[in-house]
Amino acid sequence: MSPPASSAARRLNLLADDEEDLKVLSAAVQDAVCVIGDIAYEPAERRLTVALNRFRWEDATSRRGGQRVRAALQFGSVLDVKAQRLRRDAKQAVLSLLSLTFEPGAAPGGAVILTFAGGGALRAEVECIDALLADLSDPWSTPRRPAHDLSES
Image (cartoon, rainbow, N blue to C red):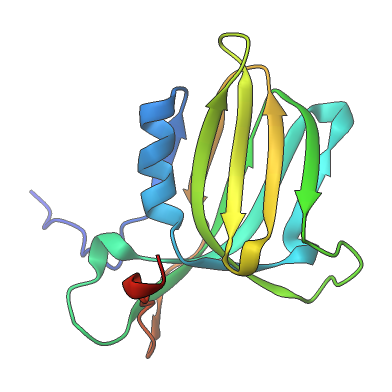
C-alpha cells in the first residue's frame, strides 16, 4: 500500500449543480486573485471561465502565510454575462474574489454572482447551476494569508 499523498500534492476538482454545491465552491475560491484579462465569456459555447490564483484554505494550518494554486473556475449553460464596476479594457487590473452566490430565477435557472473586493461583480445568467473548479498547478508558498476586517461589515 502506498502512503497517502501529501496535502500539498492534492488538487481540488469540484463540481456544483445546485446552490449548496455552489457554497462549497465559494468557500474554496474565497480570496482568490485574478486579472480581468483572465476572465473569458464565450457566448457561442455558453461558457464563462475565470483563471485565478486560489488561496488553499483547506490547507491553511498556520497563522501566517499559506499556499496558492493556479485554478480554473468555469460555468456552463451561461446565457448572458454583465459586469458591474469592472473595466474590461484594464486587462492587468487585479481582482480579489470574495464570494459566489446564486439568485434563483425560473427553475432551475437564475444568476450566479461573482463578487469582488472593491464593489466589482460579474452576473452570469444561467439555465442551471453547472460549475467546475479545478486546480491546475502544484501549490506554491505565499507569505501573506488573506485577512478581513470584520468591523467594516
